[in-house]
Image (cartoon, rainbow, N blue to C red; front, side):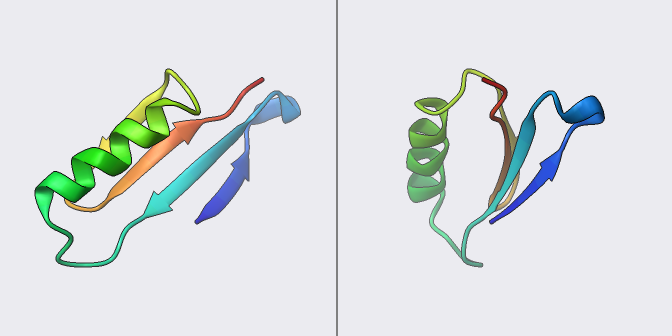
Amino acid sequence: MSRRATVGGQGVVMHVRCPDRLPEETYRQVLEELSGLSPVVQALPPTAALVDLRG
């Protein structure tokens, strides 16, 4: 998992990578959990996502 500051320090984007060969159903569950952290989640199939963590 890595974090990257956005322009002007206004927020943080978290890049989440899951293990290779992750079952699709498990990947969907990960995305659902991430949506509990932020309403802005971008899936990056097959096993990654970006999450906007601006407060």
